[in-house]
Image (spheres, helix red, strand yellow):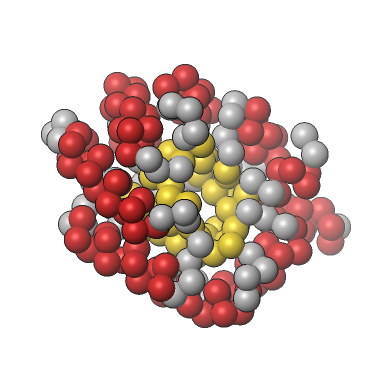
Length: 219
């Protein structure tokens, strides 16, 4: 696969609790250099990054992160705040307890509310696949499709495992038209990234791909 096309699918990500502004600024610079889809950063850095990038790169941030059990009102506030600060894309975490309880209407309602706030801006729905059964993953494909969200996303990268090829293949078989897929967490090589893209992923949440490219360039 052409490397340029691969980079254009990458949400270049830094969500570590210890991330400093200098580190965030560096991934912004790297994202610009490699023409990634976005930078995905903590909400506290969105305003500063948006001002620094000045429209040259999409800014993505996370809502209800990483556990998803905030109330819908809190997630709505977080989303409005992020957009007001200059975010272009929102990656939200579902309430996994609601899914386990089969409280499907509550999950769909929450996603719909956040999508209404986002409007034309992209909303990705993180379902944390490593904590779910295949039946639950399929149900979330149906809910995300019905909700009007733009993407279903595998993982936060903060739980016990990240994206798998099987999960993206499962998504591809069950999402409706217009719903794109994002693989995130544990993408450690160009071969991994290419495989996820071949399976149908439209975005890749990773910091490793740009780091690998920089290492190659400097070797």
